[in-house]
Amino acid sequence: MRTLFKLLIVLELFAGVHMPFACAAEGPYFDHSLFEQFLKKYVNTAGEVDFSAVKKAPLLLNQYLSKLKTAAAGKDPKLWDMEKVWPREEQMAFWLNAYHAAVISEIIKKYPLRSINDIEGVWTGPAIEVGPLTFSLNTIRLERLLKVFHDEKINMALACGARSCPPFPREAFNALRVEGQLYLAANQRIQDERFVSVDPKKKRVFLSRIFQWYESDFVLDFGSAISDSLKFSPSQMAVLSFVRHYLQNAEQIDFIETLDYKIKYLPFDWSLPDWHQEKPA
Image (cartoon, rainbow, N blue to C red; front, side):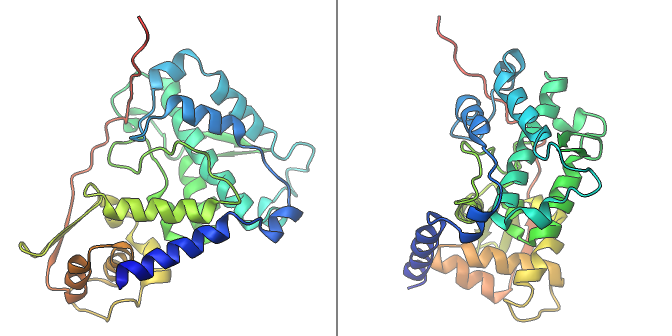
């Protein structure tokens, strides 16, 4: 019954995300087709990026970055505020795509390298120009995504350029589909043992360190979904509620609800999700 219920939710969700949003029709559109072309060309089905090929031929990426830079051309920098002008779905898709473009751009500047963390100041330094403003990766994630939309699923969709992060998408986020795209990202991460592994026999729940680092982001929507427990902190309870919400295995769902286990965090692999396409002879 749980599986059937979740299936109905998914079908209902996707029936909605393919219908035009009334608010989107009134707001400015931003064409992400350049980034869509880029992702399909340089990202494989595992979410890895052919950084070497991008380094040699960065035209598509640079064209998209230039388009982001002119997003608010002609507007007074002091008055420019996307939150007051653009519809919610337009903003969300825009910043998700901008973040991924910025991550790849930062890596390409220093490539070849072993890890994105080898780039000094990569998270806090200037990474991308949007309109008249410059943003760091942390500013996009915290100020333009999580602070504005309060959606914990964003953490399941942002590829931070490491193998233990969510994979890079092969399609750009789109205002008409962004809610469904985020739902799919969250659902896929929870079914992926690299992010969540439930072991009732060992009484262990293994979680990605993303859930440890960003656990407070899950409190808003999932803070009271499981009864209070002295065993886990409120933020851990919120994460467990989130995991339970997306699990599809009935036995694992029942086990999560018992709270009779320990949480263990999985090792985090910071190496680049690097993909080298086979070139024709």
